[in-house]
Length: 212
Length: 308
Image (cartoon, rainbow over all chains, first blue to last red; front, side, top):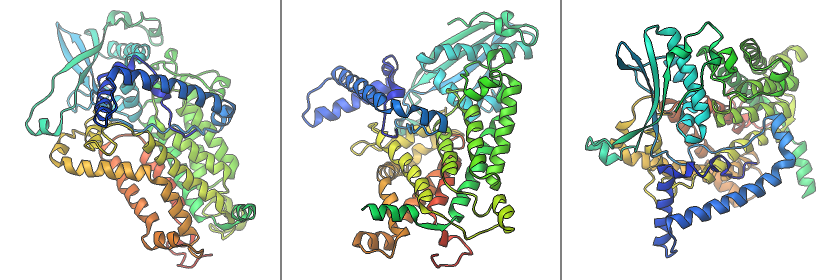
């Protein structure tokens, strides 16, 4: 069970993330340097095929033991910081009221700290980290609805709430020392009309699904 | 070979190390669930949408039996888990209480796969070890009720403590073998820790200042990687330190060079750094509970230097 497994990363769309592509590029360069001629695309396909086969075999071998893991809490998945995320995302929540957008919450900001006690908790950090990946978009939409319900309840004048991630390449040590900040881009924007979320207590779950 | 295996399985020792492990695990159960309650997060991450939560919850046998992940159900389970963790720490109820604590812990922290991490699995494995091993023979209410004393020299199977150490080493080694990123492995620039510290998801405060001490992060990256990948030698060093009277050059050298202690000190520095710099939940606290298993019963303060 503790034998390394790529199962959590078996999402081909997620492999298009620049962090993953950067890893593949680095390994392609290394293999080329030792005389193995392979392109990044070929390496990606070979690694994918190998991983699919490996996960299939591993799953088949472990299937008989699943009840033991499930009932005794003995899962052994230790994929902890196996690679640094070179293109991390920072959550921004903005509110539109009185004709202007204003920041409500910015991850790790001491100034924009709406519901910080909850959103900065390690379990919400883990959730928000996942919401930045496209294959978690349905969960992200649910989170957006939760945010909209609370903003609507707490700020009567607010008209819209916007959630988005600022995705950027982390600066190298040299760039930090020279005060050069790499450009980033806004991704995964959710725009929610709060009129749909002003509702009596307990009725908001019927509000329309968040658009993208 | 079989005789040696039987001998190992029947060998006993005082249960103080296991008891300290159990106390740490019980406290970690309380802290893990209590932190969620203290941050008013039960009604956000552990309940369904109809109850006001984000709604990314699954379910489980206990939660389903109680009517689903509603706020009253999840609040009740959370309080019960904290209470069970307290009983486990105090050593009340032996293995049955450990099993109850495990099921309550799983009913809460496992209900939302988004809002958790490997620390939940590590803690669940730790509680399961408290089910398997006799952890309440000393330093426990069970001991007090049974003998009238808080402590006891009653022997427990040494295998139980080996399981604790094995689990710890397994975790480190497994994660080490999965660190195949070009930022981690030898041949690269060992910049993994520098970049991990820059990730806003986990850092406690702005960490751009580490760019000015980049070489230190490179050394730390290399040490972390080798420490994790070589963790199986820690188990071996533990075994050698537990059986110092047996022959063997490797055993003698490992004990003289204090290999077990060197691995442990690196681990302590690693977890202390994690606690200060990154917010990865109770991971370090749960890991440190396992370290009690590394201490031989005769090494605890006040127990003298003699082996029993």
